[in-house]
Length: 380
Ligand code: SAM
Ligand code: SF4
Ligand code: SF4
Image (cartoon, rainbow, N blue to C red; front, side):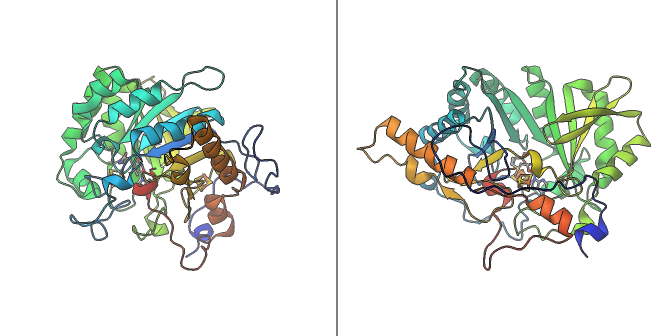
């Protein structure tokens, strides 16, 4: 079954004019071959996770004794800060910590403190956010807030404990995540985003209960986002018929709530609807049925220091070599080297996987023997 036949594509795919890679590599704003600037960086701080979400790290591929990266392989906080500084110098003004589960990284608040102190070349504060599964949030909320974390996104795929456990395939009650959200709200993280990945036939029965729970318990303090299940990585054995298109999610919600489209409004990659009585908003992120590659200005840094320019990449640019302290290189030399490597990788970029998937009606081919990276490795 091809993508186009099975799912109506909701947004026209734009015609692109591919530009030659920029010859001059050390001046001006960093723009890729499709004219997109570099604005956002997602930083994966660990490839480990205490959940085994069926769409991300299925237990059959990631058993309890799975060998994750060793501590020595991970970038340390000096290296992550140094890399983030280089991205910020090149125009990035949004940083998001992710993983794996970022809160499994010991002392993460120390890293948050350092990233929160960064400023853009114009002297502006950085938008510093984190995506977490929420399981350790109740314990960490105060430290994260004190360290200067700006915004939080919590992944939550069900409000029923049974369905939540089916999705996360881990021995954690949903109540712990809900307690984490409560704790985060108490210390001032509002609005919090809550992301629900919808897998048809597994947790689609939770769309309305979760929307109701969020509306009744949190109102506008929590913004709910429904995410189409994506074909990221190789291990989830994605099938198109397991995707529930956003248009169906909204149709379902409209049968239960009075929602109106917020015309022209987008929040990041989400399209927005609001409860007409003012009790908050919901959004949809439609990477399969309405791809947004045209606006994609996001880079990803893996926990071992590789730079990926698309969620569906199979290869990353090695920043680790530039970060390594080679003694003779002073900090400004290291910064110049890093910025040059980032600039070169971004200027080579012509990624638009989701648009190709939608416009050709098939999953874009990879080079022989290439494997797409996994979500828990580069972060969502
Ligand atoms: N562990 C943290 C968490 O779950 O929030 C951060 C890392 S997780 C990889 C980041 C986001 O990616 C989560 O919101 C998760 O639901 C989403 N995600 C993972 N696999 C996905 C897939 N196949 N399709 C859509 N979203 C996915
Ligand atoms: Fe872990 Fe997040 Fe992946 Fe779930 S989505 S397995 S919580 S990294
Ligand atoms: Fe960006 Fe790649 Fe996703 Fe397109 S497919 S929106 S280029 S990450």
